Length: 356
Image 1 (spheres, one colour):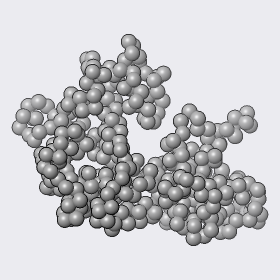
Image 2 (tube, one colour):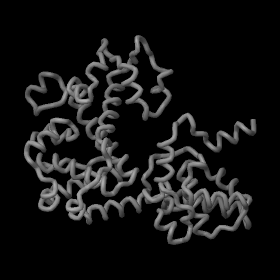
Image 3 (tube, helix red, strand yellow):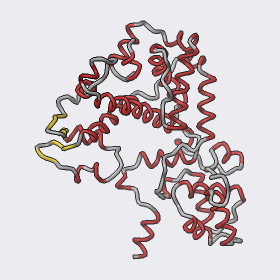
Image 4 (cartoon, one colour):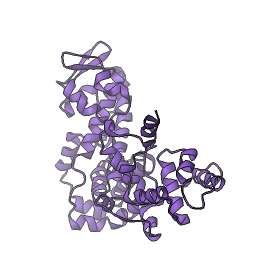
């Protein structure tokens, strides 16, 4: 097991190093607390701050923590946990390989073994799909579409890219971003998987910890998209009650207001929505929404977790996806992820078009 394997545990040769050492994962989780603790740190840090934490000083511990982290993600089996974990692993690798790509050949000869771009391209069967031209690169259109599919921003859309002879021109930095995406795909591949009971039993405390973290935190990227048909059933029901002018208990009003704030609606937009509600008072409603938003309070309040929604009786009309998530924002984010961006019609934009 070499330091390079620990820095890039998703590489085929890193996996081969673990196999060559005849590592028994069941024995590792039962006897090596350092590996288990580092694996828990990888996943928990991914959830809470988008990183995989600080690498362990021992190469063996750092490398073996990767397969154990994948086991933990599989046992938790929540979409947002899987997604954030894969993103964090890819981001950590991206920071490392971009630094190593920038290291000169002379410096490399005196330092630890490093990874170069040609090796990373070969790892993902992209060597023949990417050609260097001057300061930039050309990527075969099929490979480009696969790796650019999840990138945000119009600049990544094929229609906005220079294309010739079936190849897309990209800069070195853009190619690095595409390689980061290839790593994310690699990490995600196969997750979640079935974990033997003997291993799962050894990781009960770690899984409980991760589920606690998932239930307490708002696990979403910054969202500014309002698509009511993708709302979780609980929020659809509350929104329907608001629009029908039905009375909502305080906890229900708080939940829907916090959710709408969390997905990017302004105070004015939420106040307008509540105008049809019995006993509506603009000043009181505006104060409550601003309080939730943190503008008139020291705390920015999050949407209640599913467990809280259940305790107040606001968890209704559960569907299959509800069984796999622990937070309404997590439900909405997965729905957004699973829907083609071109099919997403923001409720506010739709209203503006209708007015026009």
